[in-house]
Image 1: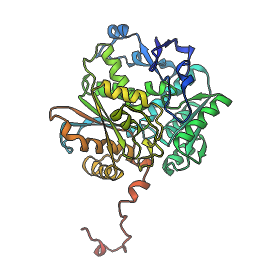
Image 2: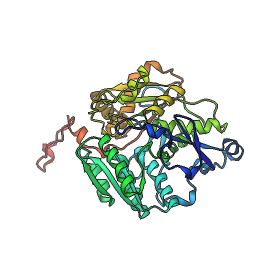
Image 3: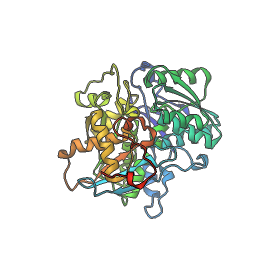
Image 4: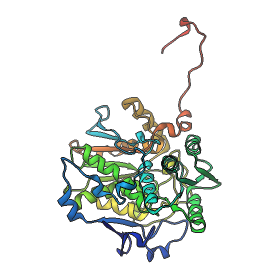
Length: 395
């Protein structure tokens, strides 16, 4: 069906001979740094090319877990549409419409499917909020136990979600990187399946489904450019993997340019792309909590996919992110969380690099209701009025 290949050394492994990282390269991994030896799934592309029919597409050909193990939980098939309210040939893929409100449902769905295949009942993850909410939701629908390590600073809306879904939530007095380390220690000591992004290669495979959907919804064509908000580097790697699989299967000729958008204060991958030298950040404080990470787990793969797709990287300030959130909502009716709004902010900052005939996709990764505390700081709630129509004034 497929083999795993190390993104670092190129060594290949049979499906069940490894679970997480390349056994060779992971020996070099130091907790608190990007992962070494992230695995990627390599399919039999010749057979896919022979078997895939665009009239009756079988997307299971591109799945690393058999359909019979899928949870009974509807994920994906989110809206994809062109909007003339934004300058240029701009299309929006709104993954805030997933069941728990973020693209992370896609990765959690596939990891829970793998847990079903392996007969594992407990799944563990570290998260700033969205991956945790997603895992808790899919686990609730699948009679699985979710154990989540999350920074205490996570938005309350995301904490409410994961708790109501029934997850065991462990608040960490520290950063996402601290939570990531603790979750690895937990699965080492108590077992369970670890869902951590990039550490578990199926998170990349799950997230790639958004790219496959863009291709299908775009009349089986690849767009020219995709803007993607980037934190740990797994979503952009997943989008790349979708189009890589399609290209290797002969379904497209050229990869879309992938644009990495990072917050100015959480820009480790951007710095790596621009300088060619990787360095952890001392801190990564940004209003866009979903892309706040000092030591992105998938930094090496993320850098490579931007370069291989002939894309580029851009950073945006917190002020630009919040302005983009407001303008996106005002113009398109889409309320995106700050991290997802960074996508639009990155597009606005990069318009001079884009030809007017190029099709641009803005990937919206999370719903604005995930974090209402951030926009509340920039708006004024109207005061209550006496119940008399004469007191109503519209400015």
